Length: 206
Image 1 (cartoon, rainbow, N blue to C red):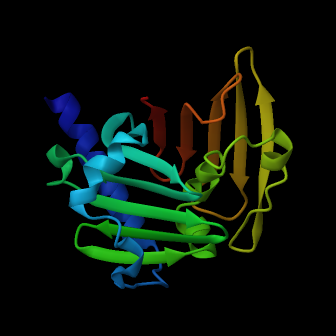
Image 2 (image 1 turned 90 degrees about the vertical axis):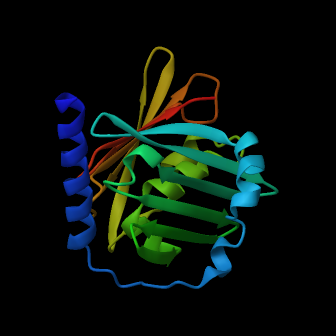
Image 3 (image 1 turned 180 degrees about the horizontal axis):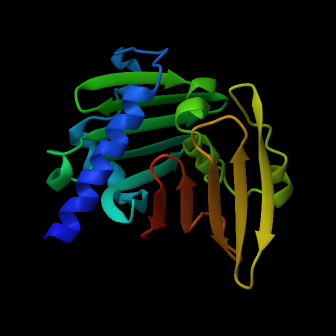
């Protein structure tokens, strides 16, 4: 029990520190962006989604669901009920054409970010969504023009025996590195590793 409890406490304090240390330039509660995130529709959306299990500091903390319907990508997730007494994080990310929006609720704080603001807060979301837009060539990925806080994101690729790793390295961000793993012949990542103040891993379930 102690072995489980101590990582939970460390995880909670790390996330709380990260949240409190950020300067929040955007604070909105306009519900227009989250009108599709109703509980009545959630089960049906989950059935058609690609599911990732989310690990923070090695602890399984949430499931993330990603869908692409008619060119509209949605990613959403929430901390498991059993952990919400420590930390409750709920989010919905929407991308369609050139527009991006991120709604997040952290404990009792609600925020909405748009477009470039998202790269500065959660850069891995728009990066992952790129792989859900159909078959994307390596050239398209390597030529992605991403800037965070007026500094570039360097992108490289490593070929392994049966998988490929795309490595994104922001030069001016609290997110230090994002690694996207693809198995040979597949388009969707089976694993994503995010290095920051709290290291996060996404593992594809279905």
